[in-house]
Image 1 (spheres, rainbow, N blue to C red):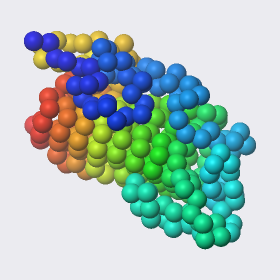
Image 2 (cartoon, rainbow, N blue to C red):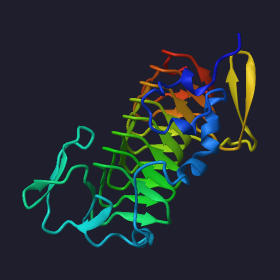
Image 3 (cartoon, rainbow, N blue to C red):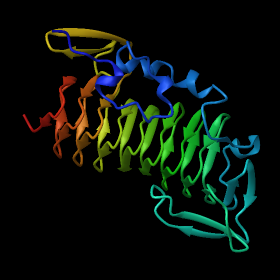
Length: 272
């Protein structure tokens, strides 16, 4: 029986605001081809940063985004609580500003079409290139590098010295520390251990193929990293080869290099 490689086989899409980036009947990786087009849609979500904030210069001061405006944080009271739990609080003269987003001094934005949702925190030293969308209650930590075509869902973490390019995070996905993700998708509640690398380019030039059962499926992609289904996890310092698909609730143990191809739901991948 052919393996089902469509998005619903990997993710529960019922609560994902950005479900339109996936085509239900197509292989899950088709979404990687259309991230830029999706982000170009003016109704995709979030508040668009003012043009002057995308000039590539570090922000000279912390700013607050609220109610479609940008304010200097001077005079505001900020409680840097847990972002994902909605504990990032901003007050002005004792009044809490619902859904306020905080961008700390030293963050860098480059290019247009960069959107931030409500209750987002972008820390000092992060660099975000457009197009990009960081949805509600997500955080981009110090030293993170988002290289464009990044669609980050709700309550996600893009961690310290983590690099992203052409990626999708479904809700509650976390890549907290020293992670590289190129041309990849993380499902709901995925957690990547520190030092995880999702390689996206074959050493031998050519299109990335995906082995699923006895079939080799063409992707049409020269660069493709990994797809992690809902609740999948990787241990520290693990590496996936280009064209790796992990079913929901799969686990990659620490220091393991994962072979490319489809790994079914609940796989536990150890050293070979």
